[in-house]
Amino acid sequence: MTVLVTGAAGFLGSRLVRALLDTPASWPRVDRIVAADREPGVVDDPRVETRVGSIDDPAFVAGLVGDDVRVVYHLAAVLSGGAEADFDHGLRVNVDATRALLEACRGQGRRPRFVLASTIAVFGGPLPAVVHDDQALRPQSSYGTSKAIAELLVVEYGRKGFVDGLACRLATVAIRGGTPSSALSSFVSGIVREPLAGLPSTCPVPLDTPLWVSAPTTVVRNLLHAGVVALDDEGPRAFTLPGITVTPGELLDALGRHGGPDARARVRLEPEPAIAAIVRTWPGAFDTRRAGALGFAGDHDADRLVAEYVDEWRRQTQPSSRPSFDAPTSMRPRP
Image (cartoon, rainbow, N blue to C red; front, top):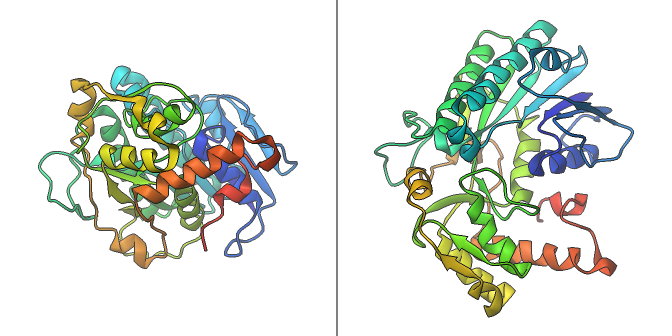
């Protein structure tokens, strides 16, 4: 079987590619992965076919979906900060390129499974304390708006029988290794990642801000499941994946317990109203019983999220005890 992954060189994309190579028992054998991104990925395996190009180039997109592609993971996107700063670029990548990719799948004529990585930023405005999947979409940012449009496109192309589509609304991934991203939620990882590396960090939102988050291992596990889960044709095709509600204060408390007081002391509260104005419109709690009933996994608590990252960080910084953050073992689900 051939799988296409857009955004394959990114943080989640590279982990997903590695997880696909270590084919889960629930999957058919993966013979080839088409890994598409603006730059080559870091996965060196003969089964990975790298395609370098821009997802907003229609000619590039048209060449990605061969007749043998059975599953498409669409992870490529302009994230929240970038979409807010460059409205036109955000629409070209998050909306126009999504439709171009759906059209390429439509032309294939085989109805491949199409998994869109969406976001909880599709919600906004007055919301209940716990948001359900049938809540009306009222995004309050350019990013959320573009993803809401992309969700509707995926569902519509599925209704017409062109793809077997679903849109998975991901929680904020915490804790992300590597360098800061353009996401407005990047600080969620930064207030743990940078202090552990001996660098100062700032929190731009109040410490009691509720955040819906999920660990990288859990997100990758759920993306894998999305590629093969059996879905009722009459049931919802866009839903929120499990996560947990945490606050920056809880993450910093956990950092102090697992990283030490010196790491905790490197984080300062420096309010940035422009960031807080958007982040605080994002819901902090969800009813994910629909996803749970379909077999998608959840997380535990802030302490576990930080402890997992600290453990991997320590292994990475000790050459004698690798694997690194990107190693396949870091993506296998907990027992």
